[in-house]
Image 1 (cartoon, protein in one colour):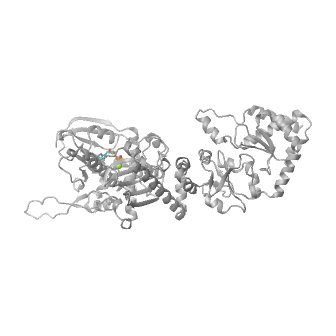
Image 2 (cartoon, rainbow, N blue to C red):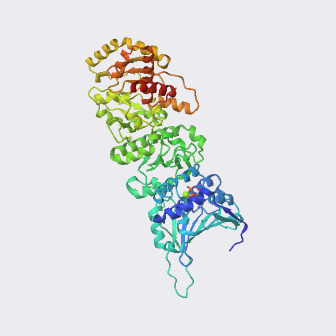
Image 3 (cartoon, rainbow, N blue to C red):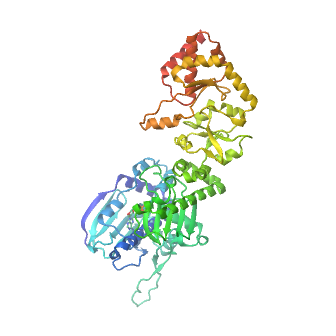
Length: 634
Ligand code: ADP
Ligand code: MG
């Protein structure tokens, strides 16, 4: 036992304590994954060493044969993992094995319900990592030394996983990390060569460096114990360099879990080898679930970058646009230099052409998923639809392709789910329909009963219902799809084109002429509140409606801008009334200008309410309405 100095006891960060508790109590059914996590870390550590050694070969300290060794001791009930990767300094150990660095961790922890089934899903989005060792061990010891530091600066970390850990400085001859798991009584089955070999084959076959187990050797009586020999149990070649036909689905899935730090299988993947002017391999995955930090600005994103098989950086963001930030995967380039930096990546023209090719691959993969596995695509859309909606604004070149992947709620689907594609919408459109009609609003419940839909209901024309906060903004980037223009049914002077017959149109014109007197009276009564008054063709049941001017901001955009503290240009709505409605008939016949004014304002306010807007002077509305009610009940 070497001498320990500078021994101290430290507490885990609160989030770590919560995570440990959760892990021990909700992942009991899949205990063996601890080995996958620890091997994954060892492999990352070796990748980092290999990369740093490119510029500082002395870090290899003469030992360039990089590997992971897993051993066990049945009597002592321990499992030990050893790697000769980058290792950790004392500070590294304290931060990496005492805190969780991910942004938004505290928020994530707040979402935990205490329901173990639900929480084990959440933890999947979070990634379990090193702390999973405590699923099977009641004490974990880590011996580590950062490559490049002297042997006297090794560190010994030890914890029972309960709230605190100890660190001390120790001698450690070899660089890298050794982890000793003292198995819980009930988990001693893991101190077994056959079991360990199976787990490694199952979860870690794709790891690109050798994972070795001790070779079974028979001691012969009277002879000295043989020197321990080791054998490699995994395939130990970079998975993405192998031909597609030789890689099994399970291997793709396990590799995904390793690089994405995810717990669940991916929804889809796309593995490609590109040759020619540029040469690279790519392996891209669509996760099944959104990570908890999808909307956090600083959240990690991007691909793992390798250059000629050597790991160069994590989270290389330059290879995919922001709206595809949820995609995980690997690119391995033959053209980039090994000392490429993030700054260089941002400027390199090679990256631009890789980025557009990879973007196209992802969109193709999603198209295929939508076509061949519509149920899975629904799940994808639930998780990532909002992010995909950022696409048309960011990626002009692929606008049409992205539009094809969008899904909307619609008047033809009672469920309210976002499940209708634009292609589907057009395919079942009315004879002569050359527009895509949509309505935006606060919520599905609000828009589905909007008076703006009345004429569409009557004529049996489908309208897409857009209620995500981002939708109005999205639609400002989409002008048409498949040659058909988009029309906001709450905007401008609704022209149904060929969907209105010539007779309809003539009749409308006549009514408008007939109501000129009423229009003038309403203009005078409503004054500044409106930009225009006209006869509506949109209504069958409601007396009046407010339309948005062709160039004006819609309600959603106005609310977003207001919430962000920006000054919003004042725009006035167009007041449209339904000439066949009895209330309008009454209004037309009203002799008292005072009562006419009161009633017009009530109709105006009602129309604003039905559109989901708030009233400028709610008290005045209530006063007017009550006055009217009193008169009625006399
Ligand atoms: P993640 O792998 O997602 O970063 P983990 O909980 O698995 O999270 O590991 C936490 C950190 O501890 C790692 O990021 C790494 O910095 C450090 N670490 C864990 N195992 C090793 C190891 N074998 N060698 C060097 N560093 C390690
Ligand atoms: Mg890890």
